[in-house]
Length: 98
Image (tube, rainbow, N blue to C red):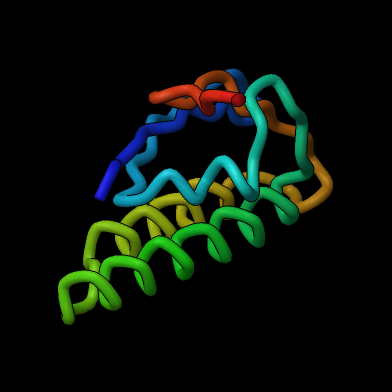
């Protein structure tokens, strides 16, 4: 199962690197896009739930890495107002278009 990392720049300029056990994050976030903190937490939570489901379907057990990423994002987000804006800086590997 392909895995990926993505990096976000929080409203105060702090950057956080995040891990996903699946490329599904590309379905929920875009490089260079801005999101409110609340929207980012919601989108990341959905992406990590989907990534965790993919791991469970393939390997038969829960993915603690996906859950840990969702928790780390929620903890970091708690420092900012929900309507503050952040940016997705990078995603690796990048999405390959046909």
